Length: 144
Image 1 (tube, helix red, strand yellow):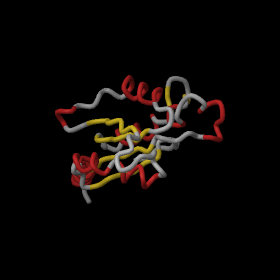
Image 2: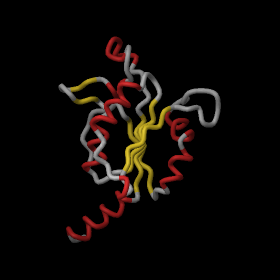
Image 3: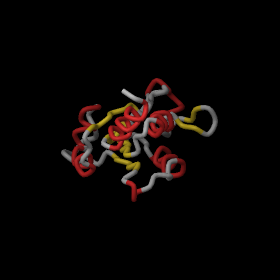
Image 4: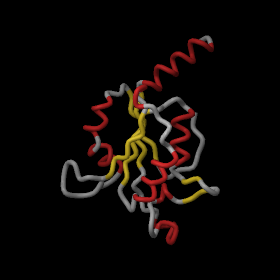
């Protein structure tokens, strides 16, 4: 595939993708670090948070429709995302949506990864993505 054709394919692919970042974890092995915040909100390298890694990976890969499913002590995570990730343009279909565990299908919190996806299916459907990319919000890695 020629470079220009490859770029157009990737661009079309990423425009048709919605990323769901699962960021509700407590991080029980982190003890004091997660006493007052979710694991993805733990500071890393100064002003950054762990959640910045999957969000940066999405943006660097061209994915600009992102939902963040939160649950455990999400206030500092929500505040960080609102302050640091507000550059998305709604007019272009770009968004970062915070998806708090709101017990959509029952009276309980998320029971795990697949339940978090299941309870947010209605939101995924409103975006009509061709592809859904499910990412962990508490892993540090580089993705392209």
